Image 1 (cartoon, helix red, strand yellow):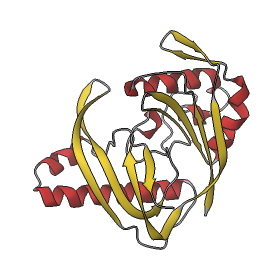
Image 2: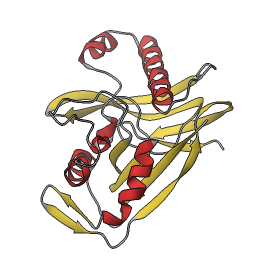
Image 3: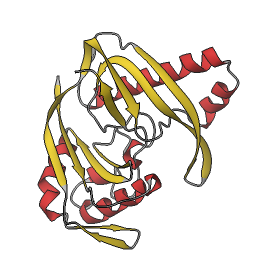
Length: 221
């Protein structure tokens, strides 16, 4: 199947990867009253538990906003209204901004695709981290592969795709100590090979709305 996919980037602006949540905060403040897609919260502040249709990332120092499904059209509609970015009080005038939008295919194919994580992949919560930490190396690998397959299937479900074929996957990951909400966490960097076709810049795993788990295809047509 296909799904709508939009990427909006700002090539002149340089930010740190940790500024992804600040980028999200600016868009939520500017457009949040118009649509909860920009912040995933009810009016009373309760979280809406769903795969984020609009995601905010800093990839290789460059801010990127990604829209999936109905979030893709929302970014197109608001494109002309985005004239500056206010990142924690630092205001950046936008002389150049790039928008790319269209339909992309998703699903399992009879081919292999290689992806890399352009931002850390948050695979584990506190509970399964304790389990993972006590495993041997082979069991850790198997555990992470099962989690990543689950992440891919969750993405398919979020865009309305029901996959009947098995997702095959092999990953090559290194653990990466990181700080999240002032807590020390373990994330992962690396790449994976799979028969699943995924759009560039979508997020997998936890905290994708803040920019974690961003994938970019490096091999496969």
